[in-house]
Image 1 (cartoon, protein in one colour):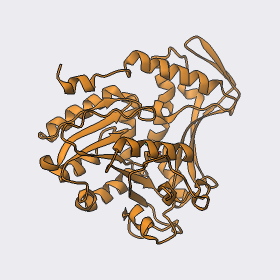
Image 2 (tube, helix red, strand yellow):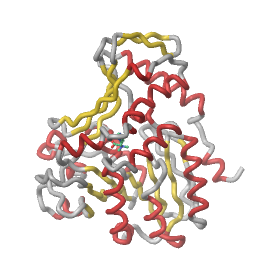
Image 3 (cartoon, helix red, strand yellow):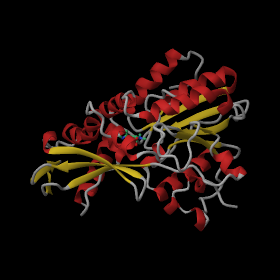
Length: 355
Ligand code: AVI
């Protein structure tokens, strides 16, 4: 077994233990007074393909807008990443946007690409596709839950580690968890490492609403895939038609909330356990936080938001496609936020270490 194969086949994300973790989470989440499920369980192979379909929807501006930023700024984005870089992408999915950056880096500067994803089968397909598309690319994929661990292969050539976290996946974490996650990425990037982030910005609620309630119903299918997955993997008996997809923008917290609402009073069975639902009772399946650009014009804030769609401002609610990419300095210790930039105000600059 080569070292690449050893890294790629490392445990503990075997199908058996993944099923066990899914089951434990489901039992805990559906047993709570307010039923919840972590959005990470959307992403089996079927869910990952549904998410790819969402990214193509006319209403879902997020991917298109970010891709636009990356396309027009690829050279500038990678310019000071260093001579030798290993690019680590937590939650890589189909790695669509990353290809542009990898190609911009080229074989001389790119030591390796490390896509990390919870959907093992989808990840293997992505890695295989990338190896054919970019012949020189060394792909070292890791099937792992990045909320728990970020496995990194040996850094043979002392390359600079850049943790690339696009797509506004950070929005799927509650603010305190987002802080912790970014601090962990910062530690994983290590000395001289970088964390590069893509975040979706607040905008007209009608635009946000449409993005999570598309006309073709793909987002609804994506949401219900978590129920379908319970039927497939956890021996559940859920009638998908008895739950409704419900997503809305909640302006107080600046987030989309996605729910599955029971259309009737019912009992479902999952791995032999029973769960009761009142008519209208919901399972909250996802938050998607939207951020503000920093209001201040300090040099730190400018550094934070190097690339954003032109005209994106904190006050603009008319832009349909605002999005920002930011680069965070290495976070040596957990973020110590100053009170004035607490997440209550969701000032994204607060993701910076305070000194
Ligand atoms: C992956 N994540 C950033 C998406 C989002 O927009 O929060 C997931 C998604 N949920 C519904 N549509 C897309």
